[in-house]
Structures are given as structure tokens and as C-alpha cells.
Length: 111
Length: 114
Image (cartoon, rainbow over all chains, first blue to last red; front, side, top):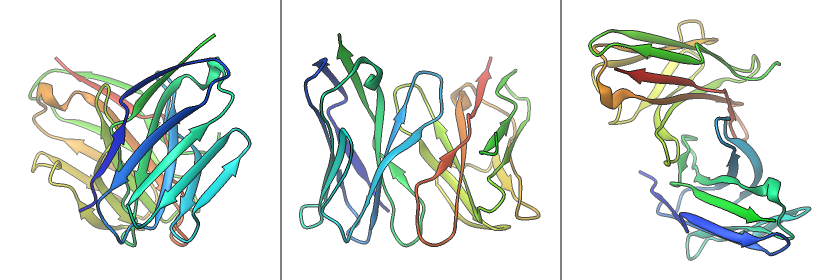
């Protein structure tokens, strides 16, 4: 089955700096890669996603890149703000549609 | 709120007792998923349904766990003879069938086994 690894486990940046979180996946059949943000005590919420036919997608300060050959994808947050502080999870799913998640990255944005 | 609804939000039970959780997905979503999340970890896949059919079960789902979605709408997850290691957040999510989109998660049921 799919195995998703995520790095780093914790990330601390200064407000205004950029943050990058990286994930790798094992199943070459995976074709959908969402990112979720989870604040303390709350449900994971989808913030951006990318499909295997696209190499990059951007939504305001958030962007995701995908390298199918290397089987890795990354989340980029620019101009970070304190409210970006949360745990971020990457995930991957294939044709069977059951999604596997990374272990998460705790992002702290210092004001 | 017309999102995914889970009940109860919190459950404290004694070891050895049975517990049942309920999930009401977004009404037009065919697929329903159960995940377990422990502190500091990502959600771990347990099982999923397409309509009323249970299509996949993780090895994490021991014989003490059973999930149902009898009418293809709400789902229940039952844990029999609970153990302390079952303490976790149990998340339900739903999605449409095709194309694949991100899941919508419920708020979860936090289980504490004492």
C-alpha cells in the first residue's frame, strides 16, 4: 500500500519568512495529493491539492509542487503569518481513493 | 452546519466496555471514511465505504472493531472490549465518488479509555 513520509516534523519561522514542507510517496499509481491544516483541537481542513497531471498549483500565499518522477511533493507558504501556525499534513491517494497521510509538520510562525 | 457530523464529541469509557460512534456524512457524498488519530500523528486509515459497501479495511482494524453503513448514509464504528491503546481521536470523512477530491472531515470523537 501507499506510504507517505513527511519532513520536517517541526518547523519554526519568523513572520514574513517562507516555509517549505516536503513529502514523499511510494505508490506510483497515486494521482491526488492534498494538504491539510489542523489547528489544535480542530478537524483537518483542506487548504490546497494537486493532481498528477499538474506540476504546480498556487493559491495566494500557498503553493504546491509535484515531481512525479521522484515521487515527492512540497507545500510552500510565503509571507507567513502567526495564524499560519498549525500542524500540516500531506496525503496521497490513488485509484482506490483511500488516502494515506504523512505524520504531520508542526509549523510555528513567530511574530 | 451541513458538513460531516460526528457524535459524540467525547467519550470516556472503562477498559473492557464497548463503545459506538456515529458519523453523518455530507448527504451527496457516496464515500465515507474512518481514520484514527493519536497525538502528534497524522490520521491513520481504518476503513471506507462506498455507499453501503465496505471496500477496504486496514490491518489496524482488529476483530474488536466493526463499522457499518447499512443504508449508505450514516455510519457507525463500534469498538468492543476497549483497551487503553484505543484511546485516540476517531475521525470520519466523506467525499464524492468521482472525481477524487479532498475529504471533508468531521470534528471527530475523542475516546479516552481509563
